[in-house]
Length: 268
Image 1 (cartoon, rainbow, N blue to C red):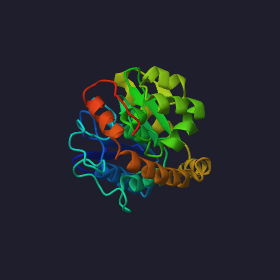
Image 2 (image 1 turned 120 degrees about the vertical axis):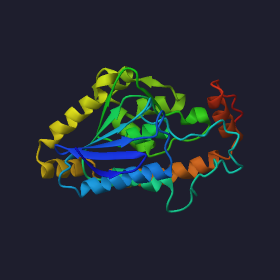
Image 3 (image 1 turned 135 degrees about the horizontal axis):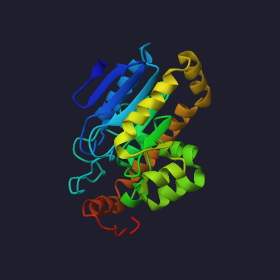
Image 4 (image 1 turned 180 degrees about the vertical axis):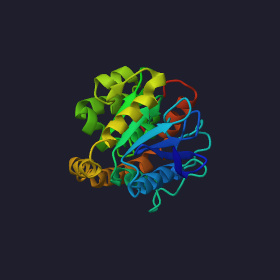
């Protein structure tokens, strides 16, 4: 196994035509602009690496990715920003990096061994396939926070589970266990927790044994226009999120999440 690209927070290695991209922000692997940019850089580098034919996206720690870390909400300013948050209006916004993930060419298998929450669910939807376990949790918890789904989930989630089930997940913000996620098609392989990564590698290896040109061209056909749709969606998602982040309901939602209670929303 050869290390090809790596940072303290992202490990990348390639063996037997399969790359492993591991998020290293344990225990919960909260994301920010820098992490999504690093993953996009890694995927694009692997697109240029003929030794790589398939990618496994995985994470170290308890969660796969528990989304963005808002803390207890006390540090959020009047514009709804946490300290150190990137300028959401600029070309370098996190969602521009997220769209890069969907523009990469090689097939990706997600090893979802733990929680994939909010934007972390958005990241879990980047892979073509998801391998999970009963202990995993999937949640589009945006409305329970008082704002709007992001990370392209308004495109990717209905595409996988259908519009009605996606709406159910969006409107209720409920957490779905791994076995229920498998039953609804949100995950493709269900195994015991200690076998998630191995099963993801096995699936990626099976893909890598097919013609690399045939696979990438077939994938491009199946996903034709997807990245552009996600770009349009994230533009709209960002616009609404920016507005709703300034509301009292958003502050209450973040505070309630920190205090592990139901929020008391007032509608403004």
